[in-house]
Image 1 (cartoon, helix red, strand yellow):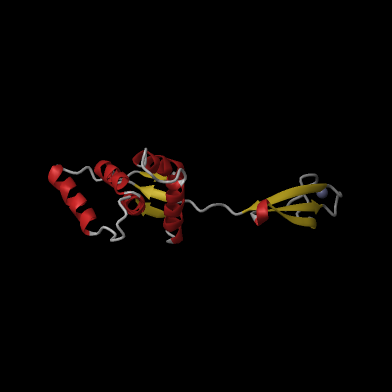
Image 2 (cartoon, protein in one colour):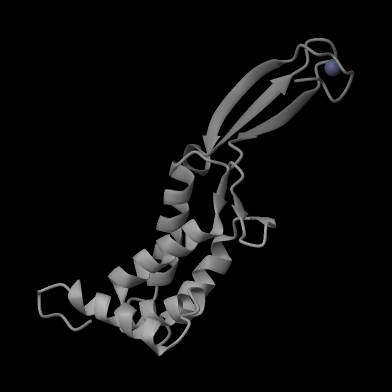
Length: 158
Ligand SMILES: [Zn+2]
């Protein structure tokens, strides 16, 4: 790290400590040439995750936007307040765990529907009807029939 005082390249670390539970490292450095002391911070840069949309455009993955979409589908459904945020976090983790910098928006949609389906079937149908834009009532009925067919047998009506 170059000295901000004299430009000397070879500065010395005199103190190093973890901040933010280890997500940041603060280092105190000293320049052997002019004795200036300065501080540097080291943080991991979150890898970029780009979503490729169906129309060919690309945009940075927006976790908050995804959470808002999930929250909207879950409006007034009997799920915990943080359900949408947790689902968005899980989806982001899954998308990032692939180690691929670019994923199709359809993958995000699939994961969102998967999470909603497990959370609340009405929310799932709400989201799917917008996301998949069912062509007609037949499409919608097929989806509902599938839900009934794969329903848990624990008697829970959700
Ligand atoms: Zn210096």
